[in-house]
Image 1 (cartoon, rainbow, N blue to C red):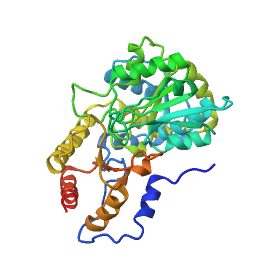
Image 2: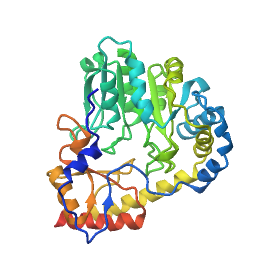
Image 3: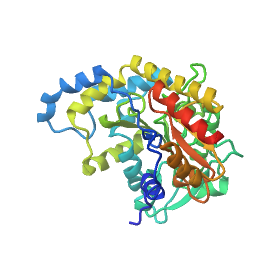
Image 4: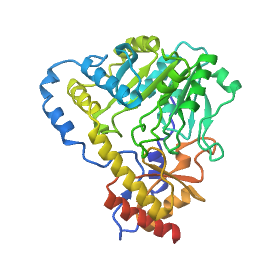
Length: 376
């Protein structure tokens, strides 16, 4: 398999010969990893669950974990799931990689479409599945929203959307997602929305919609051909907990569950017990969301950028993203990620992705550095 270099490897090569300004401490705004301590109640639950290490974890997940995830979906999206409509996963990365291989295995000449720029695991899954790729290009002209022609959709066996979007921070409404649901039924392809940023939003009256909600609104309450994936990593500042889920079409999930018993990626029991506690709690999520909101208020004050509807990214338009990245590192010891490293066919060119994942004090300091560089 010939996988592309990961964006962070490309960044290391880009900056390899650059000597940064040591007057400043390094500030890396490149990775979507929250820099906050995982809440104490989550840590304590993990410590108190170590006795369960004596048990092999079931691939299907603990019932209490599934119930916690179902409770989250019900509370957040007003969607009631049955136990056979959800599978706990080892984060979402493993499922995003292995589900396409499962789903496309019996297809003679499989075709997968996904948003572009993208989370690179989508491309890796396509390569591992020997699938033809159709890019769903997210551009300034289409407001970074997903659009494909019917002729392209007719070719698709699997489509992966990602809204709220990484890296562009774009959002799609429930009505817009419902159009995709109808297309998935019309052309009989599996439609996934990667929703791992759904809880990083800033307006209580304009929360990101789930594809599950859109499916119900589109007259598809059984979620035929429809799946969503979500994760606790961003929501709870607990990426090391590796807790995610895939939910939707029970028929697809029944066969996928059988496949997963062979994959052997079940989460250890202590992690499942801990994840259940985290999925069941909302207070800590509200707190982290308030921190991100303050960070974007600072970004608006300092850089003049508008606060996105969701995610913790700034998708900043620049003239030359490679030169911008090198010079920012050289002059201000700040790392950002060139958008072209996240896309193909020129998508992402002319942008850098900035992750606002630090506390308010650090964010203010580094945004001031960034402003000084831009004004330079």
